[in-house]
Image (cartoon, rainbow, N blue to C red; front, side):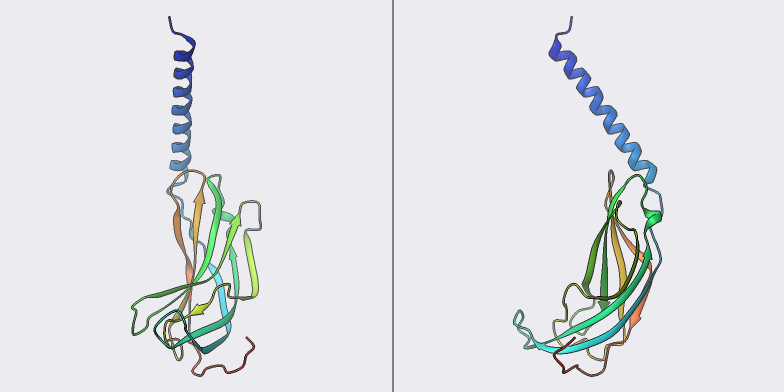
Length: 180
């Protein structure tokens, strides 16, 4: 009655339907979970230099260097639908030219098999903390926020912000030494 290709097509269609249903069940089983964690963040050794900025029309820009200590436990986030986390530290501040400035200064990919409890001490910034002008000097409200993307096996990519934030005032004078 049915030839071999018709039976193979029916079997493949049924298998794909079952796989789609299992994937949807995987997504629905973890969609309403809370993925926020708290962290302990300390920022120290903040130095600001006034450097020449060749990328913009402004002749000078503020370059900040700093070190930070980070302690956070991501172990409760890893359920059977989480493949990895993309963790990054953001510095946020306001300036006269921009209402919102957000600079990513450090990131790391945390996979399931790796250590999921971070206890980092004296970490330097991975990326330049460069302002497009001279707005970092004497700034009294630079907020450091730990954010992370939860990368699932099935479902949507979550952008989560840690519950703790750190507000740090920046120095009032420029650093003139060459060492950081």
